[in-house]
Image (cartoon, rainbow, N blue to C red; front, side):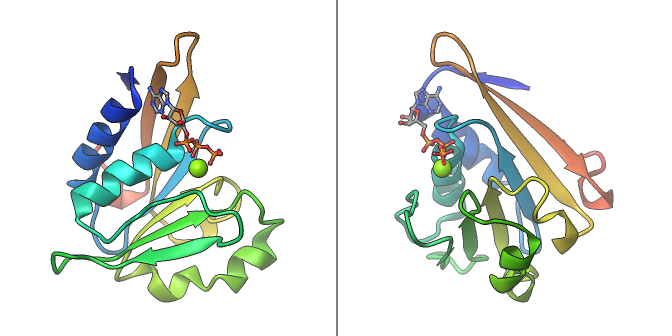
Length: 146
Ligand SMILES: Nc1ncnc2c1ncn2[C@@H]1O[C@H](COP(=O)(O)OP(=O)(O)OP(=O)(O)O)[C@@H](O)[C@H]1O
Ligand SMILES: [Mg+2]
């Protein structure tokens, strides 16, 4: 668990988390509107040295950010507007999963079937704009890592 006071700190935490992430990893980000999910993804993108910018797209649901440093691409998905498993299937995330770091906002209940391992990142918002970030690893990949 980590308490994060500012958006800057959230990005710094993301950069730290990037060191744990590699090709084939799937992380599911949860938390209410404005929790800081995209802000954390921005930090992870900085840490992974992928091409930006990381935005909250209105119409684009999944975006591929290629590495600028010979590393894995980042696939950033915002599933907020997706209705269910059928539409998630349409994104063909499993086609890119193995070689990419895949981060999914609003993916709870939708993307668990993509991989047997996943990192669950939940963000809660406190009274003073501080955020509490919790990590939970599911599956053998994350045993002993978080
Ligand atoms: N401690 C903090 N950590 C992260 N963001 C913060 C913090 N304090 C304030 N903010 C602000 O809160 C907003 C978080 O927005 P962000 O788009 O990252 O949230 P989100 O969880 O992705 O929202 P959505 O559900 O709409 O996708 C930003 O404007 C950011 O600057
Ligand atoms: Mg967002």
